[in-house]
Length: 96
Image (tube, rainbow, N blue to C red; front, side):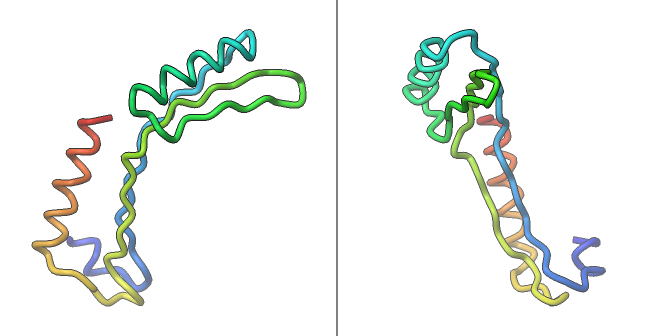
């Protein structure tokens, strides 16, 4: 809250989930891991195949949060709402 009082621009509270990157030996390994990740609730997971043939699997959940708090230095929400957002973000961190 003290930092928000000093803000002169736009401030956003942003929480992003962890991302686990796994280098897989074969595309089939990545596909199996992707299937397990999706079925376990990690809905933003995906597979990337690089130019050199490296197969990378990223396991990522959907526990994101992005909320504007100030605009041009003006606080747009109440302190009570900020406390609520922090509680929500902490819950998402625990789920991570």
